[in-house]
Length: 374
Image (tube, rainbow, N blue to C red; front, side):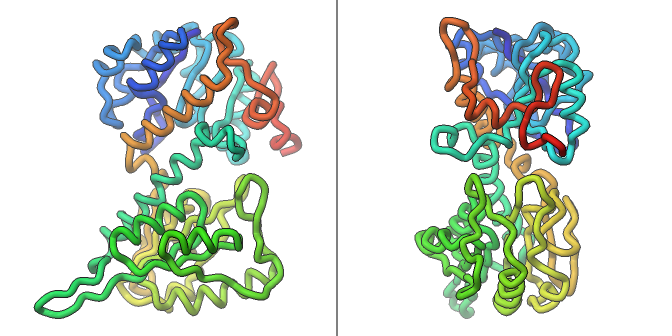
């Protein structure tokens, strides 16, 4: 069983799908691991470290030749996969809803595409969940980036020259990224508040020492969708939420938005009119900017200044922490394959629950139910 790790070629992608740690673990399962030269450089892993861990290091062609499984961060271009075994598995991020042409191409080529972002959010799959592991780091990095862009200090400081007031930080969306953003902003000394459409997150917000900001007495407050994701709210709820946010956001120094709905454009949380109410020098970090943005006017990898407010957001936030993001993503890959490892067959054998959830293509066809008719 040969596992291939190619160098990521997407613009701005600094992560790598395996580390020396996971190479050793795959070797213990009886696999051979091939890594393309230079694959880990941006994540502070040199070729010598892979070789020392037991991987063969070489050209892309040598790496992919006769591969049974290809592990990636983002789905490799089809031309890079030529030479892999027929029906080889490719496990990576596919962005299936917006890149359907890529999925169709994989099907036509006979590869079995496994979309890691489709990993179900169930207890036994938590250690395989790349969206959670990467969102955790993204929430942390968002606060650090906002703090760097903010022209003032975060914590309250009592000095001989006078008192510096603590920054006010507002986190919109309390999923994995939002919770980490709350914790990070608190550690930096900010006064933190947070909101979400799911009422169950109130206790989570309070447990981290932040103040919950919620719409009350409006139908639809639960907001809980499948797999722990938020769903779109009713028109009545959206109106009430907009009014609440407008009054609260005007008092904030830092705002972090994190709202995403799988398979759809990111919901608009902050309008230009709301930005205009904020104090000059305030900062908004839009974690959803690559999916259309939660903030009106936000642009990936650009600093947009509107009404004296800086609006920032990265096209690929986890890639700003390449070493740790790679380590977590690589462990997700290993946890996934090892959980289904069949010793007798010497390969992983997926069950229906997880296999059907993440498998996009098989036998020359697109087989995932979520993509049928899409």
